[in-house]
Amino acid sequence: MCWDDPTIIACKDNLRVIMRRSCPVVVASRGGRSGTAWAKREMQLGEGRQIREIGLDVDIVEKCLRAVTALASYHYREKIIGKEGLAKMAMSSPQSTGDFQDSILSYFLRLLLQLLLSQDFRMELAGSSADCLLPLVLCEHDQYQKMVQEFLDRQQSPAIMSRLASAFSALTSGNKLSSSLDRPNRFKFRKNLQIFLTEVSGFLSII
Image (tube, rainbow, N blue to C red; front, top):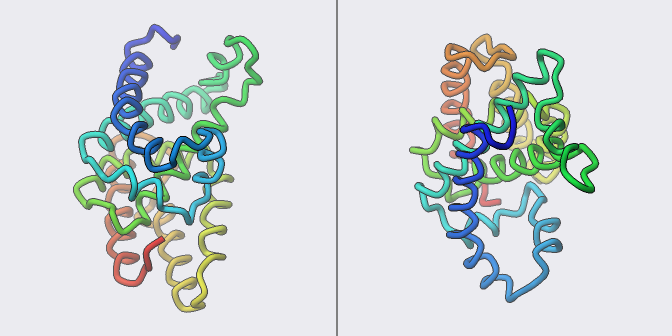
């Protein structure tokens, strides 16, 4: 796959739509602050301001999820057969370190977890979110575990921490889930995420 592949083109087009429609709101809300500084600050799992300030336009979020799903799925399928995946394209770019796929996929993973755990999450996005989250977790499993632990450590109530830990564990291990992106496994993960969201929505405070 190269940058001219239809899947990559579709991802790029979707992300352009998202950036064009979302960035003016973010910039205005930040009073013109540095985009780099803002991005670093917002990459904290517990900070939901970005989601709330942009607002959940379902059309925008759906486009974003489809784009990221395609990128993460492509990278994972390439990696499991011993290829470089997104790293090959990143390394062909000037001044690239080859770490593009790690930084960008872990960034999207953090944002998606932030979205799922925010009060603004819309349940009609659960299916698309599950399809996006699964390949991201498979690509960035270590980062996912670290992000979950960071979130658990923020909880002040031991009871809530315990219930959240159980919910996160069931999300990635329940329903005989495997490390595949085939249709049956995606369907299982959709069920797991529905259960997870139902479980945490009853006691999770606003992030």
